[in-house]
Structures are given as structure tokens and as C-alpha cells.
Length: 66
Image 1 (cartoon, rainbow, N blue to C red):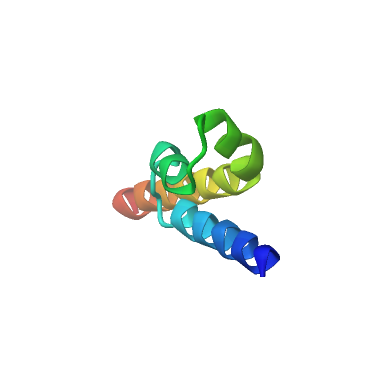
Image 2 (cartoon, rainbow, N blue to C red):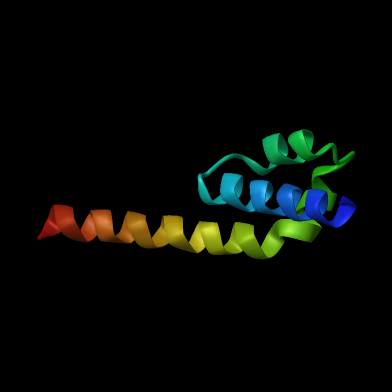
């Protein structure tokens, strides 16, 4: 049962990251004492979300100049 709880926490954090929720908010929701803990665990998802944001921004600029 404890493993299911951890999976749910991880899934929740990943979804929130992909929805653009700030890492500090996610850190607080997960009960981490430091945002560093959150960044160490979910840094890969944050980098992926950042790349997605950059791609969307670039696409937006291309659409405006076309």
C-alpha cells in the first residue's frame, strides 16, 4: 500500500509540473522541507516541461511572423 501512495505522489507531482505549477508549490504540497529535494527528484520532468514551454513559445513567434 505504501508503494501505491508513492506512485500517486509521483504521478501527482509530474502532472502538476506538466501543467506549469511552480516547483515551490509542488514541493510544499509534497511536504518536502526544501525545494532542492523536489528538484533532485523531479528535475527531469521540470526540464522536459521547460523544453515544451520553449517549443510552444517558438511556435507562437513563428505564427506571428508568418
